[in-house]
Length: 233
Image (tube, rainbow, N blue to C red; front, side):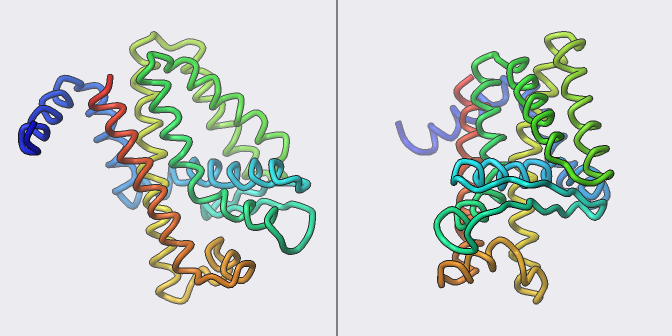
């Protein structure tokens, strides 16, 4: 089948999924509009710090706490060697986490398991709450977990599908914007202690290379998830 015909078929298939498209447009607007992004970015930060935490534990490091701040930044504290593969994996796990979580959620939504996704997210937030070490972080995690838990428990099936789909799109678009902000901040001389710069100091490879890797992973996750949500289901 020629490329043009494949594109037409893909667009026609996507047009038959107004719920998925509508949720995607809504999530994109939340991420694109600066005001709404500032209000919702903490959700992406929670996923980001959760990525650090999971990577640290899987790499055999100790997890001592997570702090979330009102400026939407965060930090994950771990114990272990000050160099080596474990620390590299810990720093590597942050920026791709929101996008990979969004992609995993898209697979569940496509399999008609939106309720499972919402319960998994709620469970992950409860696990995160155990390690939160500041007041704002507690409020942010409890608020986010309360919303996902309430939708999973009490919302009608159609509402669960819409909310789960919008959450997937938000994590995918939000993960990509967070990487864009990282790259812009590094160009402007900010973010000198960013994950990319920490990885550069640990490995000797340029920080720009690590930032490009984050961009590649986030973009790939968005493309694959879009295919799963708009074409495959």
